[in-house]
Amino acid sequence: MADRRRISKLLSLILRHRPDEFGLNVDEYGFAPLSEVVEAVQQRYSEVTEEDVSGLVEGSRQHRFEIRDGNIRALYAHSFFVEMDGEPLDPPESMFMAVELETARKMKEEGMRPEDRFYLHLSKTREIAEERAEQLTAPSLIEIHAAKAKEQGLEFYERGEVVLTREIAADLLGEIIELEPSEKAGSRRRERGPRRDDSRRDGSRGDSSRRDESRRSESRGRREDRPRRREGRRDETPAPAPEPASTEPQEITYGRKPRRLAAGARR
Image (cartoon, rainbow, N blue to C red; front, top):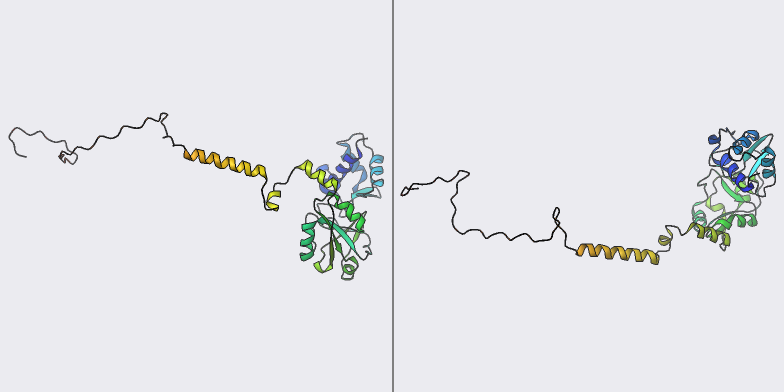
């Protein structure tokens, strides 16, 4: 059997994002026939069986997928719209969402809205939210007054470790909890390298950028100080100075050649 992690990623691609590319039709709740999904996986990993996929789904701690009545679906993180089914969750007093600190501050003022998905992805406990924050570079948790939100008509749907809901108003948000960045997030960032906008974010530029700009400026200065060559001339021999104009008065002919006069004739 192929690596379980690779199969899980492929299932996510198929069921969360691109079922049509694998010839699958999912229903309004995100389900597709398990046998057809297995055939799609076998296009890349021919040795994978239906039992392998079932074992991966049932043994996953994150509960990313669900098998029901011979069908399989991803439980959350779809990039296309799926309907919610089942009974809404009776939420705890508070739930949490792991986000970058800057994003949490913005949410506190403007409320929470899905950005790249159709639902907000919340965690029922602070511990689960902290685990999800390990991938963030400036991690924080923002509290949601979930019980109060339910009283105002907001519905929550439990999907494994994730709870899905729609927009949450700013007055339903509680405190922001800043977290220490994890070693995992630091190693991921080092692997990716510095972001292009890091220098703009802290208002300064790196030493290498300053050196590069200095070299470019010096190069421009040297080019500007050089005398420019004339186009079409390879040598730099100065052109001879023009001869001074004659002071002797010239006859104006208006385009006609001057006639020669016979000796003693008057002009």
